[in-house]
Length: 187
Image (cartoon, rainbow, N blue to C red; front, side, top):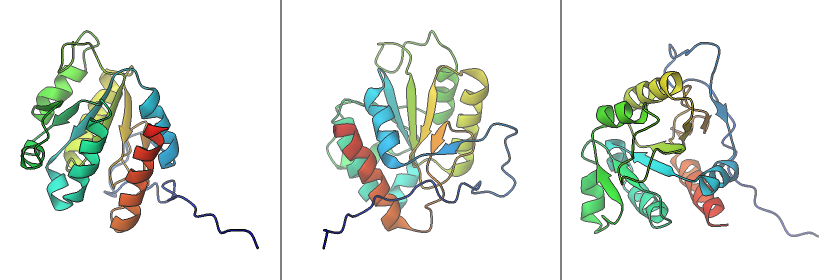
């Protein structure tokens, strides 16, 4: 009898806007498996991880974001999420910035980035309150099409390019999906 192969988390299910009235028009996000999202992030020339205060609702996610930061991905800590990184002693490439100013800066192709190295090509969102993240993603969708918008949040984000389906009610699957993204980034 062959050994049982454990399948990864299927994050392509339930691609329904988390808020029922959230219909963005003719272009909606596509859901992808974690290994695909991880490969996209790994191949990015200038990725940026944008995190928010919702991480405090699930503190284990700070450790996962630190793991991504240690791979060289700069972290934009919005709201008071920087406290989670300070408490864990990780500030190596963490930048504190407001979500609205960051969104405004990302709109412009000639922005030099948080580190002065140039504009980002992939922006990854996680732990930002749904309505704020949706507004940020919508702004980038409409005003800077050069940035790939990736959400590894527990919600299906309609204005992202790539996202998970809704995993909000299954934290174990969500944690496993983020772990799969990180594993794919290491390959």
